[in-house]
Image 1 (cartoon, rainbow, N blue to C red):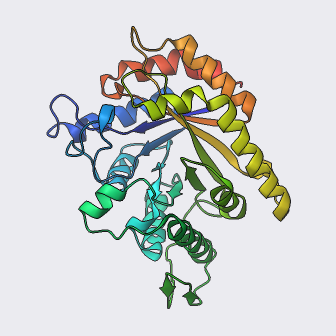
Image 2 (cartoon, rainbow, N blue to C red):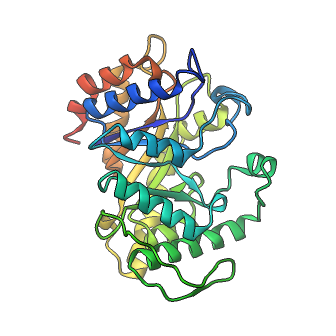
Length: 311
């Protein structure tokens, strides 16, 4: 099993003046620690409740992950996950291709429909469509991504997007292209069908046991033993229907932990990893409220990564 780190808040002591140096320390420590991947969430406002109020500091995702790619050499980098409606598909392909080239082939394209950004989208003037349109737009984006990454410059004429000449040069260094990871908060047949058809990886969320976080995240954690296998079974069925190997798709999971007295122990985190591995997940990505303290990353390096690597 591989372990990844997502940084989701930036309101550290000394912020915003120390955000840049602190991020460098976090990224360099995570790479030395043996984390496989490093992620930034794609939001423009903070999420509220335990995550922080909407006006709390939030950085634009691709600017930030590009900055972190420049101070690391091995760790994979990406957004967890790109909100599709926030960037035109042709421009998004160019952004991720650039990230992959400049990082030496370390980019993921994490992407989702964008259903959880209604407030910030409205606040910043981004039109917010219906759920059905969100999914339809995501499918068109995924078609455009595949077309541009295989070098096909013929016009794309979809219901929502029209590209007259989708040139993408230079192409990514990753072969055949950066992994396309599709994020699913709710899961469900429509989104899982898109994973089977277009994705190289999927991400399902398992919430958190931490009491300070919202009830909907704690409920997801309590329901994980039903929710996660059920959605993987749906994905497997979709793969079978279209004649694709389920094993071609990397199964990743995202959750929030805290290694601290009164929060979670090393053994609890290892047990969660083992449980997820038994379900079929290969890559677990953690949010950590105390990432900026650095010591929790060092604990994961010495006491968790060596134990879960064999799962």
